[in-house]
Figure (cartoon, rainbow, N blue to C red):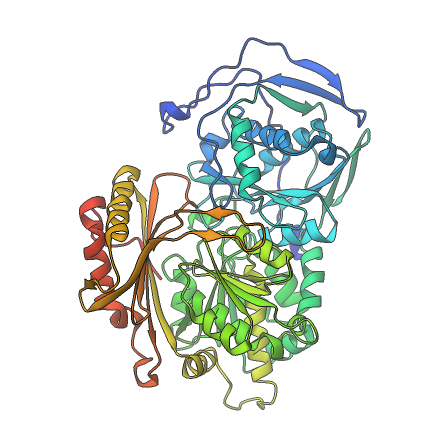
Length: 607
C-alpha cells in the first residue's frame, strides 16, 4: 500500500519540570521562565493509569489566531510551550465532558509532529480522555481529521499543522482544536484557552510509554486506549458517498485525458495515490511530489502561482495536461489549472456551486443546495450564482469557523475563500481534495458524451462559459509577507481614519465611493459579533479594494490587499486581470501609502 511507504520513528520526547530558556532567534518576551521549585506529584486517574502533575509556569503570547496557535517550530519544541497550551485547552473544556471521551489526533507530517503527538497523547490520558484515534505516522490531512471526528463521533480533535507555511526546525509549527462537528473551536473557547495559558501551573501527564505510530492497531494503558488508524480510509469512504466515482473514473481512464496533481511534498501525498490512482484508475505518474517530507523538501507548500511553480510551468507548457491541481501543507487548500489557464479561487467556488446539482450526487435530489457563503475578501462571483439558484449567500469574516454555524443550522452547502480554500457541509473544514474531485466531476459530466479523440470540454471553456452567463469578477490579491508589525498597524490605522471620515460620493481617482468601513459580522445563528475584520472601500460600480493583516503566519505581519472589479460585457472579459485592475490597484496603493509605511516596492505574492 502506498500509505505504508512513509516510515517514521518514535521519539522519546520528555516534558521537563524545569523549563530551559529559549535561545537564538527567540526574543526575550518569548523566553521560557523557570518553573516554581515544586516536586512532581503522582496521582492515579480514573482510567487506572498513573498521572504525574508536572509544575510549569505561564508563557506569554499563546493567543490563537484565525487558524489556531502558530509560532516558529523552535518555540513550540522548547520547554513546555506546547504542553502548556494543550493543558490550558483541557482546563477550558468541561471536565465532565472530557472524562471518558474520545479524541482525534493527526497532522501534516511537518517537523516536530512526531514528538508533539506523544506529548498530546500523554496529556489527553492525564486529563481523563478515554481514547485517542491517531493517524498512522501521525498523518491526518485537516479535512480528513474533520471527517474522522464526525465518522467516529469523537468529542473533538487536535490538528498539528501550520497549514501552507514552510516546515522544518527553523520554520513554522501550529496546532488547533476542532469540536465534535469537525469544525475549528469558536472564539469563545479559544479565548478561554488563552486565559488559562496565563495561569497554568500544572501539567497532568500520564506516565505511559511513547506509542508506536508506525503501525495501525490498538494500544491499551489501563482504561485508556490509543488506536492508530489508516489516515485515508474514513475520508475515502466519505468521498465515495459525495461523488460519483464511476463518472470520475470514466474521465481519468480516457486515453486522451491527462492529469497532474502536485502534493508539494505535503500531506496530500499520502492521499493522492490512494484516491486518484487506486480508487479512480488514474495513471500513477499523474501524482508528483507525493511523498510527505518534514520540511516539505525545503519548499513553501502554498498552492498558488508563485510557490507551486513546478506545476505552473507544466500547465503553461506546449504539452500541458488537460487538468492540473495542487494542495497545501495540511491539505485544506487547492489550486485549479487547465491547459495554459488559471482559475481563481473566487471563480472556482462559483463554478463548482453552479454545476454541483447536475454533476455531484451529494447535491442532487431533495437536499440540493441550501445556501452559499464566501469570506468577505472573496470576489462576489458566488453571489450571482446564489441569486440564480434562489438561495441565500452569506458574507463572513476570513476563517472557516464562521461557516460552521451556518452548516450546522442547515443553511449552507458550499463555501469558499479567495485564499484557495473551498469546501462544503460534508465536513467542517475547507477541503483541497474535495475541490479537485468536484472539478473532475464537472469535467467528467461535461465530457461524458464526447467520443475519444473528440473536442473535449476544457477547464478554460467551462470558466469562460461561466463568465458569459454570470459576468466576470476580475480579482487579484497582493501579499506583502514578513513585514514589520508596527508600520503595518500604523498603515491600517491610517486607512481606518480615511474610511471613518469618508462619505458617499467621494472621488478616488476615476472611482466614486459608495461606502467605506471596517467589516463587522453578526453571526445569524448565535448572534456573536466579529469586529475589525478588514478595511474595505466599495465604489458605485461595484469595484472595491480591501486591506487586512493576516493571522495565519508565525511571525511578523502579512499585509493583504484585495482588488475586485465586475465586468458584464463579454467583449471585455478576456483581458488579463492585472491589466483590467491596473487603475484600481494604483488607487488602492496611493490611498494606503503602503510603500511609505512598509518600505515594500512590490508584493511577495500576486494571485
